[in-house]
Length: 295
Image (tube, rainbow, N blue to C red; front, side):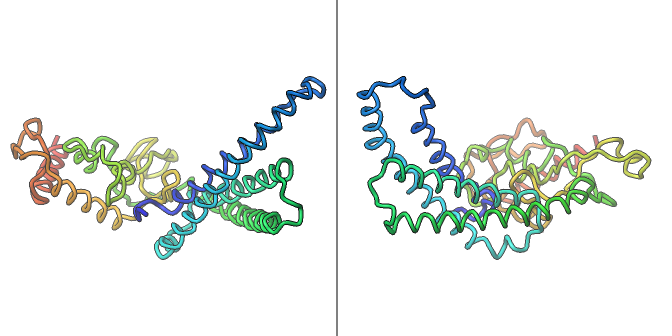
């Protein structure tokens, strides 16, 4: 429901119950040699599979369907924003989640065949087979298309254009890091803005290696920071406008959730608590940034 969570991250939740479901099938495959178990032991084991293993399979299958509905809801509500994002490495989330779900469906069908009393021509079995075929076809097509697009874009992702870019600040010196030091906002799990950790990563960018003999190598040395990348893990990188907007939301949250009065001393070590209003927050941060620049 939190609109600040990226579409790609929402997709990953489909894999959790799916992976658990088909991993659970290991219980029905003890992997022992024939004849090692007595008839009584085999009957007890079959009783366990029918009365404990199968209900757990039904439960995780239900969770898998809930995860699918949640994933479709996430895509539907975020589609207007997501379709504007360029293709990035974060799109790999679409591939493994669909095939992981297909594995779960096949594992569930196998368990039904082995331990359920449902007849083979039961509508539930037919529905599951059609459901499986759809996800195998859709996941395979998605994998092929995204793999081709991924390979074609590797040169752009590994050699970003940093011409004329002002080098971003390092981690620990960003504005978001200053906010986190002054407040307890980093302990908030549910927030109406993008996670502070994601904001700091977007503000700092990533370190890349600069080719020798270039102007960038002369200015920055063998390594430099850049924001001209496509994604940070499974999160597509925020544009400059998005970053400024989300950072402003974070500052407003800090201003509205003051823990105690702020001592607005010029010496940063004397400052404590959170800000009483947004202007105080911006004043302190701007002053601290100028002091670092002069040093």
